[in-house]
Image (cartoon, rainbow, N blue to C red; front, side, top):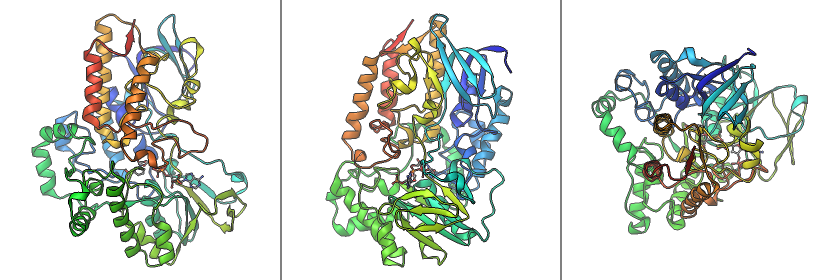
Length: 531
Ligand code: N01
């Protein structure tokens, strides 16, 4: 399409937040562009075997419509990707959202016309929309990271990224498979690859802490209790730091005897409640000694599960605190290393150098492989935005503005890029709080902001570098008060060589985040500039 169209609002992304934004803003003239051929964002792209949410489904679901949450039946406690995709498609149909969504049509370029106060949005299919606001629901983990190993083109086999898994799957029978990456994704995928492939070689650069998910069929009693108490429970979730009903201890590790500690950790490990381990003591994320106790407990579990002592030792994380990177949640990951057809390669001491015609080469050896699966994560938090060519006031590019790391007032608006409102933007709680409900909350905030601008006759909302500085300080101060900065991860941009930036996640807990947002807006839009 080459004609120029107009709209009030363009939404980028039809993932969970983008879809809800479309529903919430439906009284405006809205167009939603989505790069994928289907809706669902994360849960559309990440369709690798074993992909499963690590938060209970009664919690990890939309809260905005009571009929929806009462009627939907989740078959398992932690839903697998196909079920989440079915759910999100149901939502798109139920709320009649599809006619405003343009699939397989990602936004590639945007320019702000400062005279008219309008964004010009250009897509890969050539659509050109002029609109007043852009709501970027682009996802925090949606720009796949593919390390630039040379030789990809000469490899005779197939290379897959977990975040672009073929929609019709892939047959691994009789194949020699290499898996690079042992984060949340690799850890979920490995047991299933091992079952299907003739042989699986896992290339591990940094071992990960993981605890069993405890997934199981939905307990009807659990479902009934939730459905009878949904409004109160949702409210209670929003009052907790991680937007979850996990039990948080208020007792420091040092208050317990060694025996009590081990008993509590054992209870958390077998709680069938992912992440409970990190809440066993009140000071796990603030006190290195308390954290060490939990680390050693998990290392003990790894050593007791994995039969070969050398493999077990290599799988034990020793260089960073537990929880400083997102804790992985698994379904039999460590057990996988007891299989005869699985080998672990230390890609730290012998890094991967290149693809060869027949497989992968590290600094120490060649590995013959038919398929290489890269579970190498994402250019997280900023990647989905910086991969769009975004030009704000005075022709300034977002990539230049964020060259040393992202800045944004409240994680919502970027100085010099007016009328661009981000959901799950940098410096927001991200994966430190349940993203589906935080996304809903942010969409509601954005809808309120747009309504108030329209009501009061403003045509532009921006912020200042000073306000961005306040927010950067708040985020930095909070992360420095925890152990998070002691790990290299996608939280602090250190998962990708050459990427710059500090700590990009707000770890002060959702209630404080929400309160600061509401105070700023209630205080005559403090930190914003309306004109
Ligand atoms: O990505 P990651 P992910 N050479 O960045 C390795 C969410 N999620 O897709 O640790 C060799 O965590 C890298 O090694 P290292 C969740 O929030 C949720 O697994 O950088 N290896 C690491 O092992 C999660 O945190 C769910 O040394 C290289 C791996 O690739 C987030 O998504 C499921 C390498 C990447 O791990 C991201 O998880 C899945 C290189 N050059 C994901 N480059 C659930 O809900 C990277 N690696 C359960």
